[in-house]
Image (cartoon, rainbow, N blue to C red):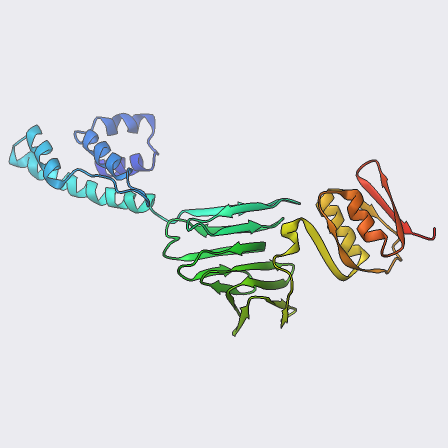
Amino acid sequence: MDKEQLVKKWLNNDLSETESKAFHALEDADLYKEIIGEAQRFNGNTNAKVASFDAFDRRLVSKKSSSTYWIKVVSSLAAILVVGFALFTLINKDQISSFKTGLAQNEIITLPDNSTVSLNELSQLEYNSSNWNENRSLNLNGEAYFDVEEGKRFDVHTDFGKVSVLGTEFNVLSKDRIFKVSCYEGLVQVSYEDNTVELPAGTEFVLSSGKGQKSDIVITEPYWLKNMSVFEDASLKSVANELEKQYNIKVQYPSDMTVKFTGAFEHNNLENALESITKPLNLTYTIKNTNTVIIRNGQN
């Protein structure tokens, strides 16, 4: 195997035992390791001090002064610098930061510019941290609340559209074919398909089944940040599904029960949550074996 192939395999940490011995036996092996070691000191946040060309010159000349050897060294050094530059590029390539929440799990994420993201349950978020200050852009699948520091444009990309701001507080829900953006401070721009909508503080936009609607909101932050689930004219099935997710329980109720629920329940006390749901609807409940809830008509 020639020297170039050995060097490439060494950089990829792919040398066999025999090849490794051959590489370390190369006349320039130590020089390769030294220069690559310097290249590895680079990263996106530090200024590494790399030996100058003259320093390498003096070091190499001191080893041997013959013109033949010098030609070999110059050729090797040029090849190493190319490899070093390639490695530098590899080291500083896109650094993707990813976050994912499970059932009934929230997570607060601090971005490189000190903007914060509160990630709701069953959601995913990712962004390129290597050039964040130049390109404040991230991808969201699920729901998140953003408190954005002022600065360059800040973009949230979802499967249904894009949300753009400069510095503000807003909530984005992009899940189950629903796209909802709520603005609590500042101004938010929503782009979807070929349309653009601007949302000042106190308004929200909902895109469902291809139809968009803008409306006012009176709350100062989403209810899920307060560990509450809120419903408006929701079926018992929808409420029961949310209870099961938040408390990791099984909810049983008559299949023919068609009541509608408008209200809220908290996430940290099952008894209080059940009281909030059943009392307004004249229903009763029983907690069985700590992980099963049975809801019945209050007249039974």
